Image (cartoon, rainbow, N blue to C red; front, side, top):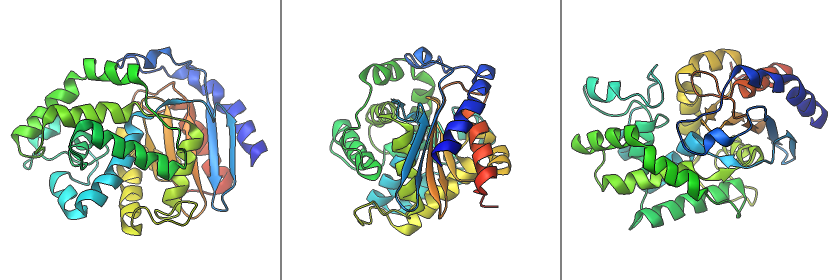
Length: 304
């Protein structure tokens, strides 16, 4: 496995020249676009990494998977999905269009920005600080990394420039989707996106989902049904408006972030984490997708 991963990183690193790093969030533009790393945690618990597999970056939209699990645990599936749909949009992750034009005004799914902001508003806690602490504690537990923290500079930059997200949040408040304080929900959202992880941390979270919500100690952190909901949404909606093509090419539940990360789950086999900050036009790691496609074909990982 180690040799395979090293060979794949070396082969697909050059694909990064066809992408570019995100620059609309202050701080993300500082990433080296040629970076590529992968980590894999297998069903037997063995983990492997290559390239920049242990380099830290901000989790960004991959955090939406984390908060969805916590929101379901806090509120129950029915209540969460009374506020948010389960369907892919075909639009960019930060599109506002369908919020106003669909009959219910509900976000189409929890893995686009509008849906994720609504999910963040459902996390239990007396304040945004308490809600974020619960999210951070949760991700520390399922990644089995108690040292995870967040990037203050990225968080403040997102908060300062996140006007499109702010407009969506206030629209949802007007429609009764967000019931609590809008700025509190936004603060939680901006901060959760700035949590720093490595590809290895993502691979461990992937293994947690492979094991249907059970961590290494044997503790059942979320229900099997919740884990299945999350994996189902990852395969249909997890790669923004490139999810359909990704399902054809790679065929495993995955969630990307504009920080360059990809969290992938090969059911019954392994959790996979990717870091490659050069993005394609849809906001997904361009070299990371090429690497994952090759790994999926080599190891017959596609669920289809």
